Image 1 (tube, rainbow, N blue to C red):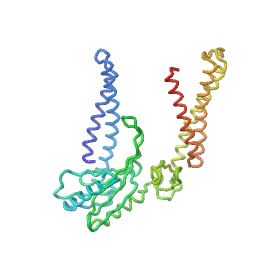
Image 2 (cartoon, rainbow, N blue to C red):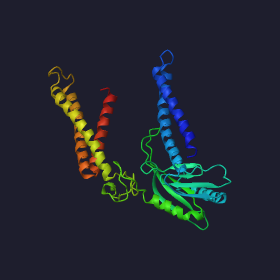
Image 3 (cartoon, rainbow, N blue to C red):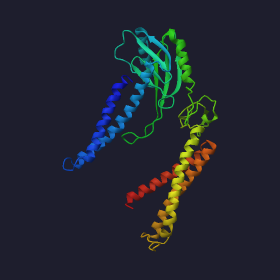
Length: 361
């Protein structure tokens, strides 16, 4: 990313325009704007706020990383790449990009080769090559999954970081976004190879950091950092979001316990609400037309049983979430059978509700 300040300010402007458009869609009188104009304003406003705001957050992160490197904070190494070496690297990089299965290089390459060469600053949470800044946070995206120093007598040496973006959500067409894999490849002159080795060793080690409430150091000293893949059984103490062998999401014992606490609270709430609703509604639905207290169910017996079945399924969902959350707090692990059961039950309830809505129930 080049010039993060400029792109952050542009994104903030887009978000601000979206906020204005959304307010206009709500506040403009009907005489001043028809339903179509108000709908267009609202759709644009919501889209601009989400996209502009999200982009501004990431560009601000890049800007803060750039400013930290400029102040010398968490800088591990600096080196200079002369114009000749830079040209050789660009030619080699172009050749590698043409190979089958090559991942795109995130490096922002200027149109013209700088006459004075390119300065490289390698930090603990960011790397700057010339005016191209790349934030590499320890516990956020992109995740550095592999780091290596490639040296050759006939080609320019370079560092290559393989980066992973988890994906998730859906695009404009409704298609789920798959994980994205890229690389950050940048040159290393011969006189800086020792510094480059130190940088690569640091990133290859998983960059252990200070422990906090949500994460441990990630260096193997705390058993709570252990993450085990419930698909293939791969285990690691490094802070990783996905399994390198099968791609399944990873979750440390520490995170499992905290997620279990949240799940228990949600399950307890659902159980309490649905239990109360069933306690008061079941007698009426089992006896349609009969007044019980001050209310009565006006549907048929079949409809009463149907609605009771739905509420019972929601109650089972809540109880399962509560018990599974408590088990996670105690064990710090995960059980894929329970996860599949909860997801399947949630999907079933969603399909039932959609069917009822489509039928006009």
